[in-house]
Length: 127
Image (cartoon, rainbow, N blue to C red; front, top):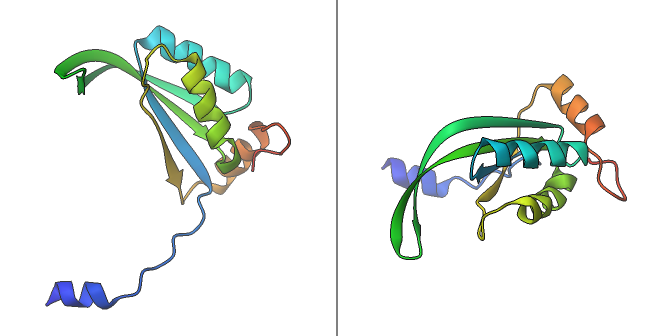
């Protein structure tokens, strides 16, 4: 019965994302620091956080892999997502780097304002 009720409800539109969390796994902390610092210096991200010692399991060239990696977390604006992802691809050592952008719909208003002030995109204001 519950499934019937759920199917009858019209889909609710998602509010526009206020910002994005872009994350990528890196070969090691040194690579994550290099990429993080570079994209923040270029004003493609307002902030970079690095979590070392991440264990990753994945398939690569037909074999299950286990590696120690570093997780790079970047906070940015909607307009900067694509240029940021392109920069990560160019700076990354992996042939196929994992890069994901997660929309953020609820942010501390003061943090959002700070982020929008710090991110710059060529030809725009980062928002």
